[in-house]
Image (tube, rainbow, N blue to C red; front, side, top):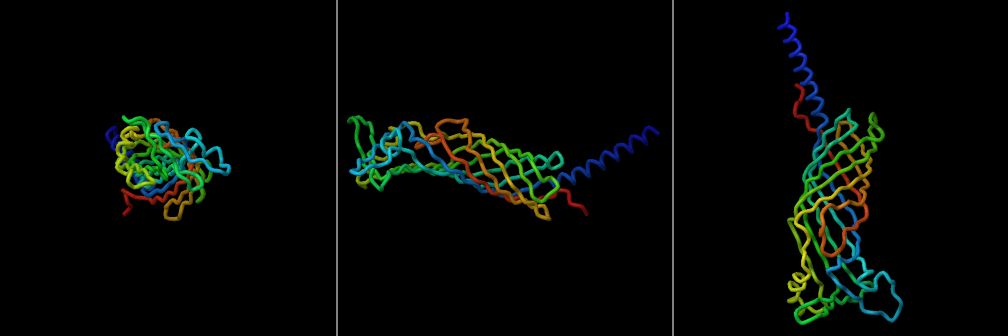
Length: 261
């Protein structure tokens, strides 16, 4: 009798696990993402620029290296997997993401800039139209979102928190000289500046999102992303670590590893 009860219990447990596996499979999704956020910050203190003076008034924010700001953006795309838990109230996700960061320092009013460069001969001046930097990173994000509204609806709102860590796989820094004859000094100027962008980066971020769940389970989502908080230093060589928020788009579809026959 005890053996029969034990066998019955085991059969019930295996059946329950099989049903749970089928349910969990419908909660697992894979998809793609795309996002962008704006960058802005003061010029890194390794660079010293001055703008030529104008006869007419200019904005103070563009006069002097201590006030000049650059511009840039970070765009990323990636593959993502999701798993819903706690009766679809929480979604855990991870994947592989490629981020391309572009920064640019440009003069106002289409004028030129003077770049101060310390060398063995003393301080030298180079006239430039501007300076640019492109960085590519491959990272792994870890995220979790919590449902705010719409658990039984096709429309849902949620908040998300995440962290990302990655490594640099691409780097290009350019100086746009007024005179092309000055191109030969580019490497010397960049090497004198020292500390290149870090080979490793990590940061935390948050967002608030809206998603639509289609009949077959595909999810379409758009998120407003808050400015990230960086854990690593020297992430960029042109600008300090300041940024605006951004937006992210995400499409995922269910994958069933235990299809019903």
